[in-house]
Image (cartoon, rainbow, N blue to C red; front, side, top):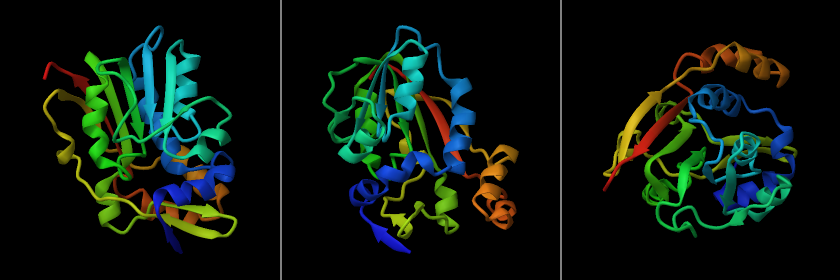
Amino acid sequence: MTTLPALEAYRLLAPEYDATPNALIALEERMLRPLLPNLEGCTFIDVGTGTGRWAKYAASKGALAIGIDFCEEMLRAGKRSGVLGDACRLPFADECADVVMCAFTLGYAPSCFSELRRITRVGGTVAVADVHPGALERGWKRSFRHSNGQIEIAHHHYTIRELQTAGLALSFLAEPTLGPPEKVIFEEAGCPERFEEAARCPAIFVALFRRTPA
């Protein structure tokens, strides 16, 4: 398995990213979509948008949706306009968004959490999802299959507790395991024997925070 810095890895993975089923993303969407507030008329910023799946979803629900990512190749692969930028130095005004999404990005930029808070209006929502830190401690990898082999993406370790910060109140936390819908993805990938072991512990976490006055 080859380990690459995040930007280099996603540049390589971009052309095939949306064509490769991902059980963790499937679980995240299954858990998170029903939890989001009404997006009609909201300003929705998707930080670490990648190919823009959450920005596209928000736009389909009537939001003014903006995606930002550090990888130009991922933005192009999504065939949707987005902002090229750094999650730790977001080019947005203070308190400009009603809902801020950050999915599978904190592991590459954990210090961006304060920026998510900064751009969210008081009373607004910050939605976060990522690989569960406990799964990574048990040996899980941030990795993807690629035509050239398995690629592991270099990342930073953090804990869910470390996300607690002034100005953001935790309103919901789930730590789900993989379920029957994700089992199908394992079977289609030709590795059904790996599902039982993978489903024994939380695979991801999903958290909602409410922006409070600082």
